[in-house]
Length: 286
Image: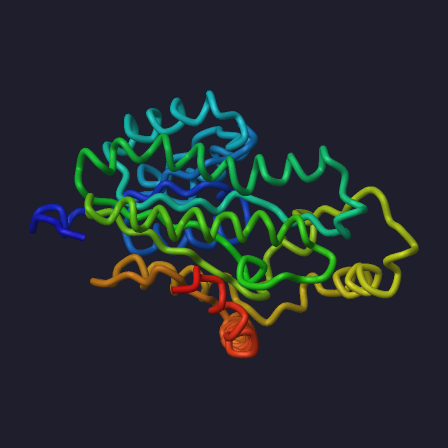
């Protein structure tokens, strides 16, 4: 990111969606602790004062439901009015939906994508004109290890995070000429509320999936609060990535996430080599 000397010494302004808890709150706290400003989005009016009390004058709360496309530009305009600029956009708002594909209703799947995918798109579209005008900025999109591999019992959630991965990778290419960076964050298991109150299950539970998705249901029922990942350390890692001279496109977080990525790369390579003759045999004969 190209900056002037004056810009490089100014506290940065971060626009973070979903700062009431989890990674959003941990990241907001880490950013405020280093002296930067945060405009954080919240779903309830009662949450604003509590958030702004974290750092009066530097923590700014705005109401936003990322699925309400019409309200997103207004929230971004409010952020610019209060903080003057936006340097880093973090799309953190989202949730997990578990259940076999056959168990998940159309309404449940669409609400998931409206939040995890189209909510991210809505916010990016609203902020990009500001970034392009300044010829700088950094977009951080929260994905998951579920955006790297498919996981039994959360096909729709994995699909939503795979969509975020593809969107982000393409976006990085589109925005490179403008000096705008994109980083995809891929956390493993962290002790947030993801597996607690933020997680949703399909309302239908089929006995046909008792030995597959049913096992996932039983595992997740005791998983909350046992994750080995520290959200505060994840937040510090994101700050380090954003501050780097050459920020990463992808940032797996946690030893479990690193292991997932390594196994995925090995599996893709093994599959490619096993079917190489067939895969390479489709050109016209000369």
